[in-house]
Image (tube, rainbow, N blue to C red; front, top):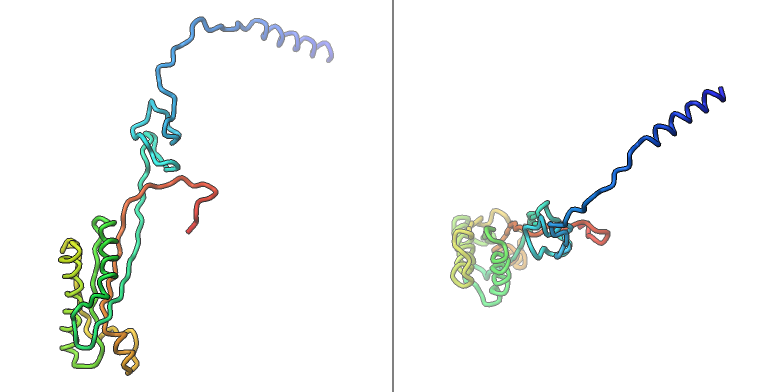
Length: 198
C-alpha cells in the first residue's frame, strides 16, 4: 500500500512539473476611462448622465432612477351664512394650494362646496356650487392655475361635518374643501442605514 501511494505521488508531481508557465509578452494599453467623477458607481466610459445627485439610485448608464411620489393637500374655507363671497383671510390657504399645484405638474384639484341645513335643499345646492366656483375662479384668475386642472362641485347640505342644530355646527358645515391628490416624479435614492422607513 505504501508503495502504491508513493507511485501515485510521483505521477502527480510529474504532471505538475510538465505544465508550462505562460508569461505575458506585452501589456495592453488602458483606453477606457475608469474614473467615477460623480461617485455614482458607474465608470466614465459608460456614463451617460453627468453630475448625478449624490446617493441616487442609478441604472447601468449612470442615469438616476425616477420614482412616483403621491401627496395630498387639503384646505378648509368657511363662508358666512347665505354667502359665496371669498374673504381676504381665505387667500393664504389658496396661495398654498396654488403653490402645491405649481410644484406638481399635471395634478388636478377638486373643489367641494358645502352648505348648512338652514334653508331649503335646492337653494343650498346652488349656494354650495357658487362657493366651490368662487374658490375655483380665484385659483384660476388670481393664482394662474390652469382652468383644466380645477373642478368645482357643489354638494348642498348632503354631507355635513356635524349634525348638531347649533350656530357653531352650521358655521362648520358652511365650507369649501379642496382635496388634491397629485403625483410627481423624483429621483430614487439608494438605501442606506440612515434611510427613513416612513
